[in-house]
Image (cartoon, rainbow, N blue to C red; front, top):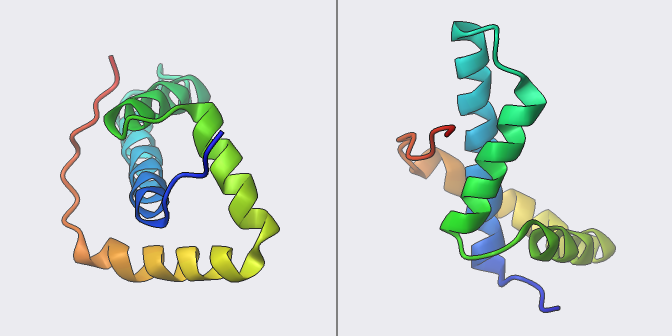
Length: 94
């Protein structure tokens, strides 16, 4: 299995973080929703949107965890990438 490219990882992680925040907002509005179940649905949609799989993402994430220098650069890049993005929820639970 191949490691996802750096720029793909950056965007996928950013979208996963946004999906989590979006879900938190939904939970506050509708307490009948189950957070973990909704998170999984939203994460699946993020992976689909980026033409990857949960397995490939976690394989890639493990690679970055095993290379702390690359993980630090990735996280720092996400920290600077995120504020430049305008949050527009494009992923909605089915």
